[in-house]
Image (cartoon, rainbow, N blue to C red; front, side, top):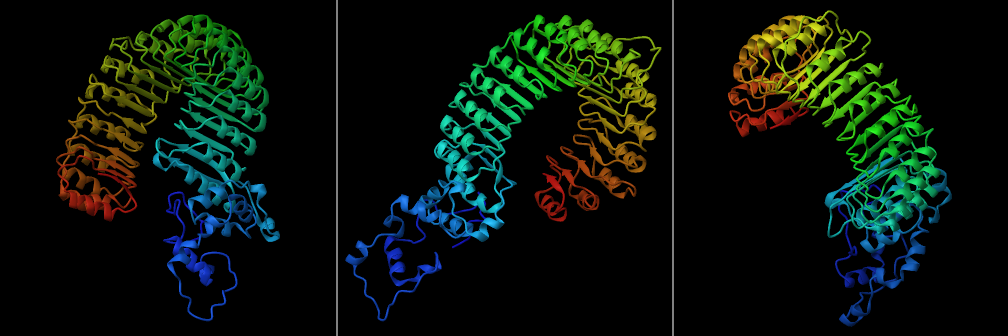
Length: 631
């Protein structure tokens, strides 16, 4: 019998079947004494002459599984000599596996040698996804983990409707894996409080709990966790419709080491639950995320007062929160340690509320603002001026914000801003301004994506204003031409390291040539995806002028086999990642050049290169065996 102790949940084992083909075969083996091949050794039967079996005798015989009741088998299994024997028995049938999984770890009778060597440090990690998420696999994990150091982390993400995970599977894990510290359960409609309460009763070392789309669990589960798992540090609850204020209150009162809480789309969670949680964990809670909850200004007021240890705060879709809530939160003076703040789709956020938040968070370094329809230039500029430690600013779908606000933030002599990101901001228009009298020497990274009004004038002004730029990302900006980007290139004094120009369809080889002449000695990442006017001339320039380039994306460009050949002939070039997807002019002739480049490549994208035949793709895959290839 194969050793089940070194099991893998991906492996095969008999489910609901005996090791013998038929009950008759099982009886014959037992009567002849040859069963030692499959189980514990025992004395051979005294057979001195051939034994003739009749059909009637065979029919009277019962298989070994059916002889004893489950109670007796349970007592036998827990007295087996070692983990190997228990795992071997578990591989006999589903029935035996389920019985073994019912045995708690402390109920197993261990030999003296086994006790001296047993370790339960919980270092094993197991993950079940989709159809593989079943009770049988959980039972196998519970039995097998005993002899391998104990289970520490378990993730179950199921959608198995017919044979999905139930409370039985969770009970098996609870009884066999008391060392469990990290549990993640997603999309398990058959799980209820019964299974999670068993986890709480047995797995007292639990530190991280993640529950997503489990409609049948309630406050009873959280109360059990609170009572039995005092070491809980991270709690995430998403779309659990029966969890409410009482459960969060119990967690707050008992789990004094709680550091991270994320609550999303739980309609029964309101101000009372958030207030109870925050007031009880004010000295430990460092990360808080609230999304799509029925909370009001009261919750923000409590956060502003009791969030004295919070460093990361995220609000998403809090529809009932108004300007007053943000104003009170900022003036609560409790968020002194806040370093990262993200606000998305909170339409109660106004200029007045945002300015108050900036004043109340003096150590804020990162601010992400998404889908804020009522914020204007005044609010963002006042916030940036008040948040004196701000280093990273992201504005997404803030359509009332214009260039005037952006430039006012950058020209502030006290600004410490290092990274600026603008995404989907329709209020950005390409206006002409005078030459700035001051410079923003702190800004190192600029990213502008899908802002159709952003053009050459804005880009030239930013280049003059921010000479220390090293990372530039311009995505989908059709208004940018060679002239505008060349102005930026010549203004960057520090040397560009990462440049992403994907979707800037009006840029040509002239821009690439100018870029590499000035910054070829510092450039490490270059993305020209979709720049259809870029040709082999740019590939030749890259091959000759780039000294440190490790990542190159020329997908959708007008390059041919000659361009790939030029790259392959570059002596100093050591590319790690190359993308030439949708380059229809690249053919099988590039095969030897790609093979030469493959000496240093760890990633290659040749998707939709219709000039490369399937046979050539196979050769590339075989030759570049240590390179991840998308084809």
